[in-house]
Image (tube, rainbow, N blue to C red):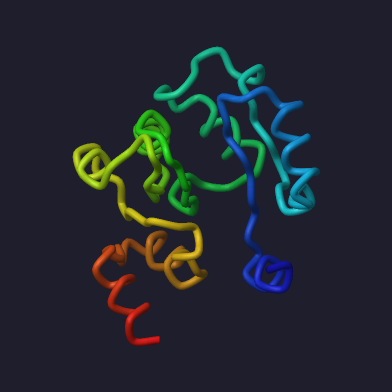
Length: 143
């Protein structure tokens, strides 16, 4: 993972409705903190999801353009907020969301697991070559 991050100059950030100390604690427990350059938490913005504020602040702090960003979210308010911020969206199915939910709010891509994501999918989303769930599932069967 570290090699691909450096090779492709990927900047990872977290925009969350959780408190910053909780996010950092969880990332440290999982050994993942080093991958996230910036964390924007509940206490860092006034207006929360579905408002785009948390995403806009993260974009500004990462010094990137919204058109160069892809966000992964398991909640509908998060997808709505990212779309309002101009970010490409990946809806991650969970016990609280369905494919129909994400289709209704026009998530750019819907996945069942983060294992379904790779650098090519991210590049395609950024370049507006939207990838469909069908293509992902077909690719998996052929691998």
